[in-house]
Length: 235
Image (tube, rainbow, N blue to C red; front, side, top):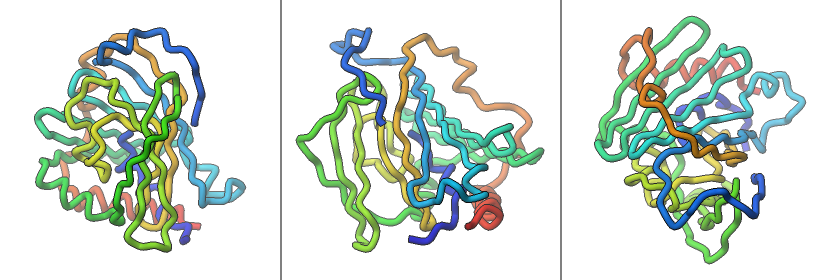
């Protein structure tokens, strides 16, 4: 597998396992607000490489009703990628910060179809297996790529969150639940994302809102910026 295209993945990180046998929450009711902390790793990139030292190892997903925000950034905030999603209204906002440059774009459901074309095709195979991740029992799904030379991906998700169609804007739209462990493949690079902790405190409205100071651009411009990063960090 080629070890290129590292940071271009970050536009897709919308959503280990820290095992827990007890959750201080009544899961008979759907969860409407939460903050999920994820560990991020790159299984096919050598951990002692120079580029690997600049890669992020954490991601945060904040959920409030049918809206959520994901954030991933490098050490020192040199690079930051934010996604804000309205699953009910089918609205998606991407924000990208590279050094002092800040760009953002809004995409509709139809425009997201083009975005998904950047990802290799796979078929999801359901399973009866479950696993407890960050205190929640999750269902297992395996993604088998149409290119049989590409290793399968293992996904664990939960339906305990009250959120409409949470994956409509990413390659896992068939999964009706919040993913707590998964892998994502794009431009010959794979990232592994695993939930490590979930906080159930109330989420402020402003947490889900767009940040100021970002220039509105078309997605094609945003994609070019990611590709520049990819060339800079290819190993």
